[in-house]
Structure formats: structure tokens, C-alpha cells
Image (cartoon, rainbow, N blue to C red; front, side, top):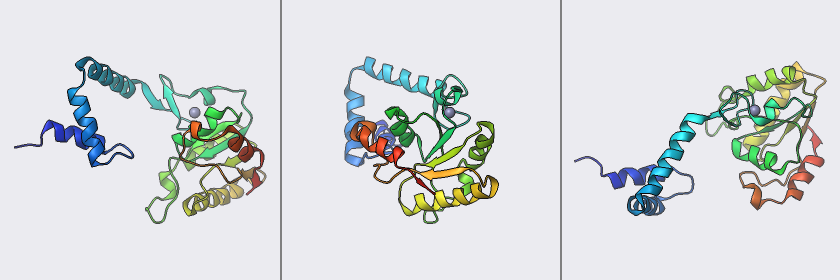
Length: 199
Ligand SMILES: [Zn+2]
């Protein structure tokens, strides 16, 4: 006999971040027993997302029905490029509205322990954008972990070879990466952006 539908659904929820076996089962039971109409709306939303949400061709941010996100479409932003590791961190800075340049999502960090190499990150497209967007400052906003440091130093060294005159900085420490904007004060983000240091 195959795996039961309840087990299947539990396994699906198990893949969500922060959801353990017990909570996965709870969510599965909730979905199975709730109003059918609510499930239909949920399914419709998921299908919509699958069809209409893409990654921005330039920076990797979320875009609905288009090739470029709202930031990359805007030609009037400052010629600065803030490098973040993922969409979550992008939302932290872009949601604050305190940065008026462009963003770039690396898609992870170089990690010898986890076997993540530079070619798995969006470094090539980052370099392309420096020219195309006439960027005059690169700002690293990566966690102060060893992977974060390895990644910023690796990219910085490549940049110094290719663009010796480009200004390269990092934001001040103290930003709680991986948190949602409502858990972080705007003051913290503002200070980290204002007090950036040369790299
Ligand atoms: Zn974009």
C-alpha cells in the first residue's frame, strides 16, 4: 500500500522552514478538515504564484509579470549597488526605503563547509551590472559570519583587479540578517548604511 494522503501532505509541510514533524502533521490535519472553499482559494493562489512570479533578470529579486523588478526598472536611482545574500535580506533593506541605489542578490554565500563555490553565486552578472549601470560604489551587506567574510573578500579581490578605482565598502555591523523588517528598527538599518567602512 502506498503512502497515505495525510502522510503526503505532512511531508510537504515538513519542508517548510521551522516546521517540525508535529507541526507539519497539525497543518496537514487543519488543511484536510477545514472549509473546502478556503483550500480552493489557497490552491488558486499557489498556481498564480507559479505562473506569474519570476526572478528579476538583473538582480534576482521577485518580479510579477515582467523581466525586471521595480528597482532595476528605475533609471533614476543612485549609482550604488548593495550586495545581499538572499531575497529575505533584500526585503529588509528595500522595505526600509533607506537605500536609494540598486540591489544585487548573490543567491547564497561561498562556504567551504557546505561545499558552495563562487560559480554557484551570481558573481558574473554582478560584474556585468557594474559596467552597464555605471556603478560608482559597491556596498556589501553580508552577515559577519566566516562564510560572509570569505564571500566579501573573494568578490572584493576580483573587483579590485577589474575595477581598481571602484569604491568598495561594507555596511556597519549590527544588522540582524535573516529577520523580518518588523523585528528590526529602522534606526539600526539607517546607522548600518550611514556608517559604512571601506573594504
Ligand atoms: Zn531587479
